[in-house]
Length: 191
Image (cartoon, rainbow, N blue to C red):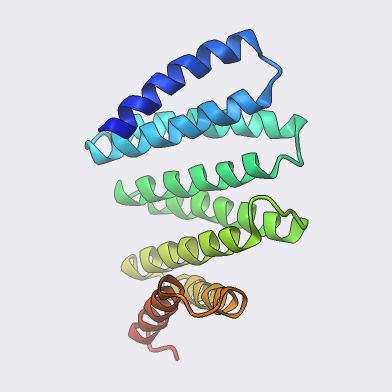
């Protein structure tokens, strides 16, 4: 509740600031960040349609800004995060085709970030996002009897967890993520 309240207050202030500074993309990125928090609260309160509208607005704002600032890696990371969030809401609403389309865009955004050579956000954070996103998409595909899609995403999730273990060492979150992917694959008859 407090996060939503603060995000709404921040969004109001940032909207006013964006009108005074229309060419400052940093303000847009900060505003869209707040929209992501607001959308989460709306979803949790049982208002997925409103959450989708807020996310769609934020996604559009980022897409328009990135055209002019194509090397703003943090904005691109935020865009991928909002698309991932949108995919989850679409999946919960039973819109599986839209879920996989939006989730696939988020996936491609994150992979493009990794291949860009950016240093901020941290490549490990991007890999971790990919590991979780691929797990989400794989699990969702499995629930919808899309076996091949499920296997593809779950194997990719497993691979990202392995890369994180190699680069970050033995950590509980990484170990649990890896075992979760392995167990989901085993349920599908894949070793």
